[in-house]
Image (tube, rainbow, N blue to C red; front, top):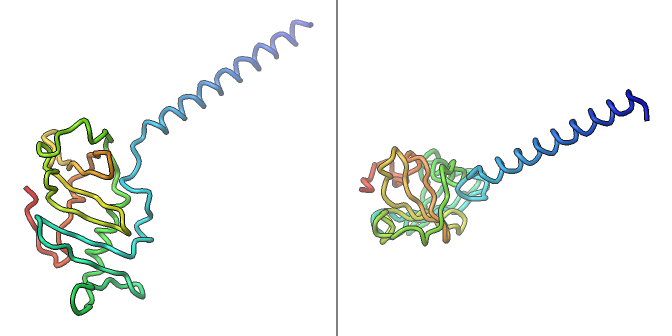
Length: 163
C-alpha cells in the first residue's frame, strides 16, 4: 500500500468517525428535546371540553370551520379563543417527569385547577412553578412544565384565577 493510499484510508476513517459522532449527538439531542404537549395537530382538534375550578365542563365542536358551544342549545362561540385552547396541544414542553415523582396536591393537581380535553385527550392543569412563569400539567402518567400563557380560561374571554 502506498503512502498516498494510507493517507486516503486514514482520512476516510476520520470522516466516518466524525459522521458517527455527529449522528450520535444528533440522536441524543432529539431524544432529550421534550417536544410538544400532545401528539395532536391543533388544526385537527374538533372537540374541546373545558372545566375550570371544578365547574361543570363546557363542550365545544368545530362545525364548518367555526366553533359551537354544544351544551344546551348550540350557539356560536369565540373562534379565536377556542383556537387558542386547541393550540395547547402543541404547547412547547419545558420538561417531562413521571407523575410518581410528585405529590399531586403539592403541585395543584389534587384536584386540578382546570381540565382541558382536546379530541378526547385530557390535560390537567395545576399550580404555577416557583421557578418562573410555568405551569404543571398532567397528561396521562407524566407531568410537564409548560409556559404559563397556555393556562386555559373560559372561551367567554373572562379570565379565571387558577391560583
